[in-house]
Image (tube, rainbow, N blue to C red; front, side):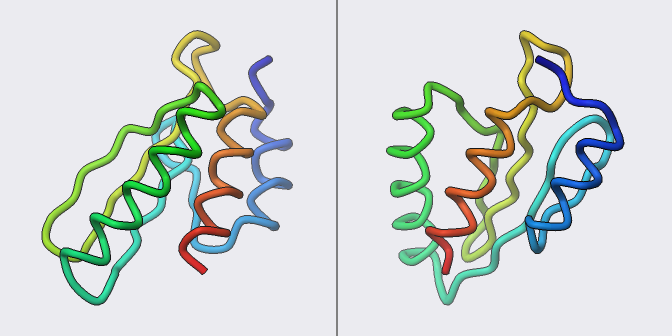
Length: 92
């Protein structure tokens, strides 16, 4: 179920480094180098697959840009919040 903007703002209080922009939860992660960025993306991919919820993302050298949205719902849902929390745990 699509969350309201108030619900999203409240949830963001517990998601450091995430923002709500253009209908997406967004973050940028900077790693030490490409190898570390790729390793982190691989760990995220396994979590995303387990949740059956996949991010929009791109990677340039040591930087990963991630955008989350539940396309079927047309907005942010609990799936996005769960994956954002997992990503925060993985990045340390």
